[in-house]
Length: 158
Image 1 (cartoon, rainbow, N blue to C red):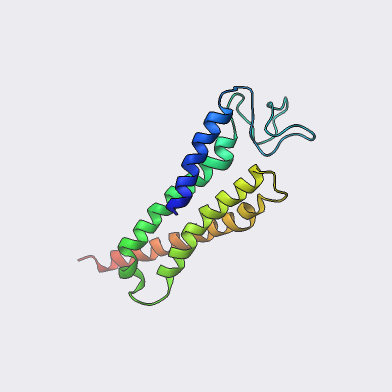
Image 2 (cartoon, one colour):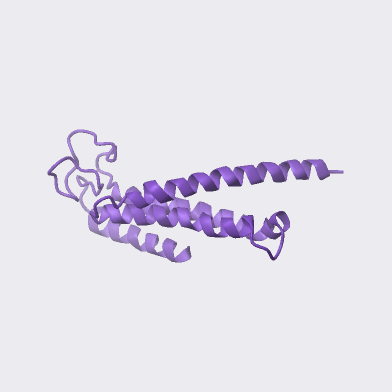
């Protein structure tokens, strides 16, 4: 997971040096028909270039996966610190499930955005078909576990 963060940090620097020098440029993967990529901002809002003079690739291939990775690191720390107490020690179960699925969501987010950024047909599918479902699963299951733990702790209070 930290390798993914290192890649994203390098990507941010690369994008800033390469495209942030021209204020009228978009690096979004959703350009109008027959328009260059990267190219000038479209005259009509396309849904991914809402702010003129802001390179959208900084969000598309850098900030979104990076924020997902930071949240994943925070949840993995919580799972590491409290996981064996909550889920039981030395046996497969929720602890191993979360340790596997939590880092996969941002990895698929990054993969889908990079594939789209590189112009691979249907490259964003990794994000839509794997990253978002895994993120949804993680959010729902971690919320349920948090509620269950809160109820257990409430019942144990003196």
